[in-house]
Length: 127
Image 1 (cartoon, rainbow, N blue to C red):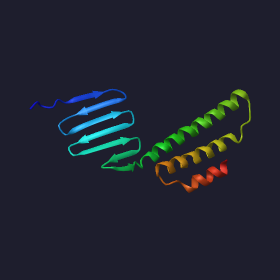
Image 2: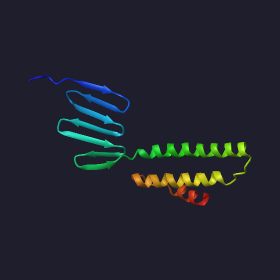
Image 3: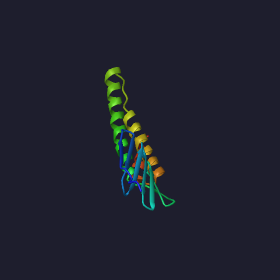
Image 4: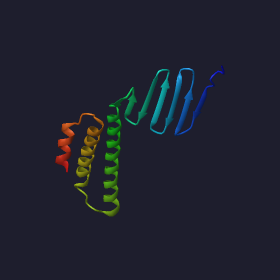
């Protein structure tokens, strides 16, 4: 019987690895791992194996990072508009922060991560 050849492809959006233990394919956010008698599929925060679908709870940290990025973008835009156009935007930052906090908690609820009552309340007050 012919020996199985190892194959490795490593491109920016496509990774293929194959060895004696099994195979691994990654296309963008989709990962497929196949080992003897076992196969796992990962699509973003979803982990699928043996007919079960689990949500990866660590995605909450990604949401917090995006919220911080949005905060700095809002503050930078407000500061730039005020200095360039000499316009007074006193309430823009609190409204922006309120929208960011509410969006963060909405995102948390969609992926199954517990929401923060504090930021939800402060987001409502800020708007």
